[in-house]
Amino acid sequence: MGKNAEKNIQKILAIKKAYIQHIKEEIVQNAHIEDEKKLIKGGRKIQRVIILAGDGLTMRLYKSMLESLEVKEQIIMPFTDMGIHLIQELGKRTIKEEAVKYVYGNKYGKPDWKYADYTVKNGKQAIVLINNDGEKIVKIKQDRQVNQYNFSRKSSIVIICMESQKETFKMEFPENEIIAIPNEFIWNS
Image 1 (spheres, rainbow, N blue to C red):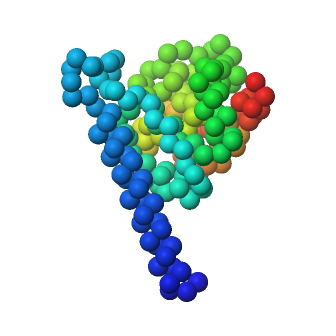
Image 2: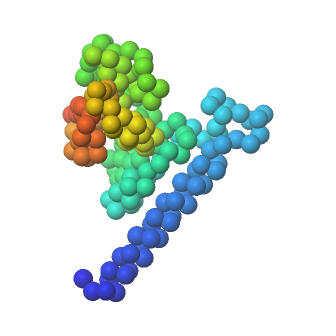
């Protein structure tokens, strides 16, 4: 690859990164409420954000720059037919509960950890990442960082995802148990 092509690629990456950072700053700025009369539960006017990544590069860049936006959910999806269909299913169904029931039957309960979705077998904290929730991903990374030198504590987090997400989460969270459910769980329901 020539120097000009490499410079152009670096310029494109810099523009995409700047745009991603601008979007994040705008979300954080607009998520908080200044007027106490307009407060809703949680003190935010934006509780959920859906980020639609137009291509694989944008998705990887966004996830590499992932940080909490101080919202309840930061759903990161590809802007494809499958991504749109998954968002529709998330709006129609209780996918997190359906997924934990698929794996554990009725043997689950309320979470012990604030950022988990459920408590499951052996007191593990289940986080359902079918929705690719950036806020939860950030919390898992923070938990890993806080406990990285605590050799007496094994990870108590189990991640539930779709088969198509398993390898990505295995690479991202090698110390966590990853349970994959069939993609058909979403697509054929």
